[in-house]
Amino acid sequence: MNSPRAQARKPETRIQKRNHEAILEAALDVFSARGFRGATVDQIAQAAGLSKPNLLYYFPTKEAMHTALLTGLLDTWLAPLRKLDPKGEPITEILDYVRRKLEMSRQMPRESRLFANEILQGGPRLDGVLEQELKPLVDEKAKLIQDWVDGGRIAQVHPYHLIFSIWSLTQHYADFDVQVRTLLPKGETDPFPEAERYLVTLFTRMLKLAED
Amino acid sequence: MNSPRAQARKPETRIQKRNHEAILEAALDVFSARGFRGATVDQIAQAAGLSKPNLLYYFPTKEAMHTALLTGLLDTWLAPLRKLDPKGEPITEILDYVRRKLEMSRQMPRESRLFANEILQGGPRLDGVLEQELKPLVDEKAKLIQDWVDGGRIAQVHPYHLIFSIWSLTQHYADFDVQVRTLLPKGETDPFPEAERYLVTLFTRMLKLAED
DNA sequence: AATATGTTTGACCAATTGGTCAGGAACACG
DNA sequence: CGTGTTCCTGACCAATTGGTCAAACATATT
Image 1 (cartoon, each protein chain N blue to C red):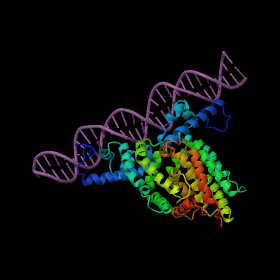
Image 2: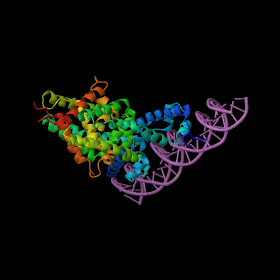
Image 3: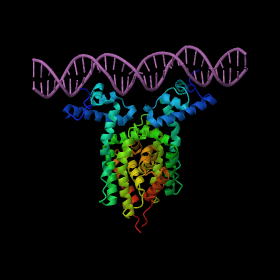
Image 4: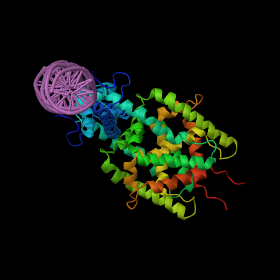
């Protein structure tokens, strides 16, 4: 028998599991740093400590590694938004979402860049996912935010653009990390603590109802 | 004589000017859509309506086209920030800056993506430029903003993160255009008018002094 | 018209790269 | 142990791609 992925669910051996994980870890490293076309199978193989043909034994093509990564990471990536809770206090909920998202930028910059790279190129390998996974979730949460606005619990905002702005502001610290670190005054080595304070202030002022 | 770029400033012929421009225009198209490594010289040649060797007659290497683009566009790209005027009314100045920057995202999405692609990959072809061109400008404008804060003319903000947030929010609409358009409810075909309203609101609430 | 200079290209090359394949090594298991 | 299965690799291939070059073509100048 050939490639272990080819047939129906056999119980995965330990070796398969280990190498599978090593490959995806290495692929994340390389794809996120150089983009899909910029990455070579050899680089991934080296990063994983395996030979090139061996990678192709576990994944039929380079593209298969890439999509395995994207689809595998999507849930993790959307988890913070999923947690936005209709029952919570609106401003706290949104600020917590911002914090979670910023934390992801700090802890998972490679994942952020992987998605950024993909979307920047028009997301050719992502069409379906956007429409079918992301859109329903965003629609649902936008509606939730709109309800909060209508209920007079947060200030007037366009819910979709609010969500976009949270993504944009938080992911910026992962995707444009080099720029941020280059431009920040030398004292501040870690941009994140200050970024959190800034973003919390921003969204607090943005969402708090004007007292009249 | 060989390549027309090789020697000192001869008066540029009309043909040189025309082709030079056509090549850079085509290169912007291709580089911004596929990144440096994803772009091929042949694609650029085709987009420019010239043959591949002919491109290499005007630019010694693929990389030369890329850096010519980056350095050539940097001034345009930074112009909106340069215009931030110490003598103006602070909030108006910053809101105008946001508007100008958003307008650039609308009018020049390719340029935005070109820079985004580059910085995403750690900006290997951009090191010097960041340090020597961008940093001084940002330092100067950050100081200006700090003065406004200290003078009690706008609310307390971290000036550098304020600048980052303006970049992030405005460029998002160029760099992640596909995503934005996919997720926005079907009625709104052009995201920009609503985006402008949203961003103006956001920065107004962010910067206005709390009346006490 | 002759000549020099600038522009263009077809043919070609070497390097890189995604992927194949036949067979060998390691392992599971009776 | 022996045998079937899984795992791994060196050698190889075809396609792509950045770049070269000699020669053809065009354009200005005298």
